[in-house]
Image (tube, rainbow, N blue to C red; front, top):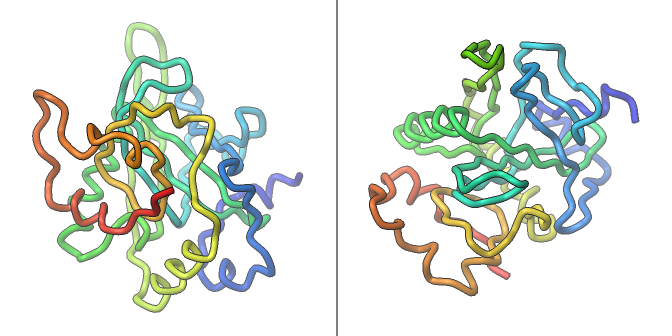
Length: 216
């Protein structure tokens, strides 16, 4: 597949004019933010952006959660779903400092009566260094979509099968914010509906984001 078709779509008009959006339920295309090199890549193999270059996408669905996945200890993650230029549904994960920065965006959006699925999100890889070497973290900027574009994106999300990435569900996630995603764990456990011991209760913008959820 050509690199250009792997780029995230950033124009709503182009997205809604796609003849087809391909999505095998539970198996979106997997993208990765390579924090070592400051790049967006596809499937851990194909670089989509040069080192340190910002990139944009339009989140179609998202969830922010704490879980033990992909061989990492329990930590907070952000998963964004978007459409690429090939018309494929894609998943992108962030963790650590990058998730903290994304949650700051949620706070800003709360005061604009918007959420992550109402914006064009830009990811800025920022260089950092420590005793172990150089690396990148993600910071974020956004541009609010127009009301008609928001409505179109919501219709796109509703037209697809339940959105999730099946290989990283293990039933033990605690959810902080989500929209337009399938959360099978919530059907089987009440533990995700309450903050874990020692955590501050969710701020109001997280509660607002949690308003639309697709259950199995």
